[in-house]
Length: 45
Image (cartoon, rainbow, N blue to C red; front, side, top):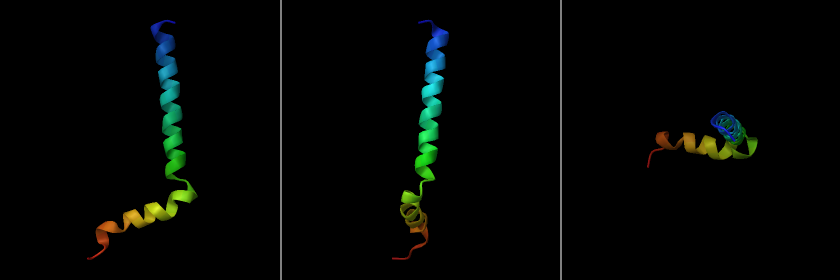
């Protein structure tokens, strides 16, 4: 395995991790939690 193959593998793994984070962030299952967290700075105690 030469360095270019290793770089290609790392690039593909990084792309998959990025896409996984995007899917997780835009998931409807997490939408309520994220909307609640977005309103925290505006809540008065």
